[in-house]
Image 1: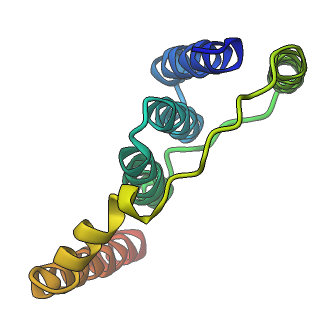
Image 2: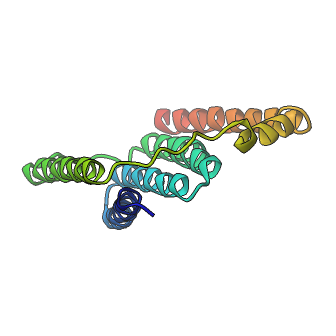
Length: 168
């Protein structure tokens, strides 16, 4: 394993662990949800590095995308995310941005020191998405569409229940 891949693995691992710790220590649910999204992206990067690109993409689409959007939607619906921005929080954001910048700079330095080997790109025979998509959109199309309708009805019902509660 080259130094670049090893550095990337440790970087994604550190980001996932730090984001998970920040997720469980937040009092406000909205920043906690954003830290959880960050954890999901770091885990997705680890999956891609472990030669599981399909699982990495599903991690981003399903967990970081769909589930976290529903979670943030519920939090905003319940009005749980009221906090005031403090100078300490702004300083923490600057510190975090600086750490991300240092990580990217270290990434670049490792890449300049040990360039990537010339590896051929994955061809059509390595495509893991085609069999899943073919099965999903042929054999299980009705179940897939019914699930999307059930989720849509649940969201509309949640909005209607929230409107009734605020009017009374």
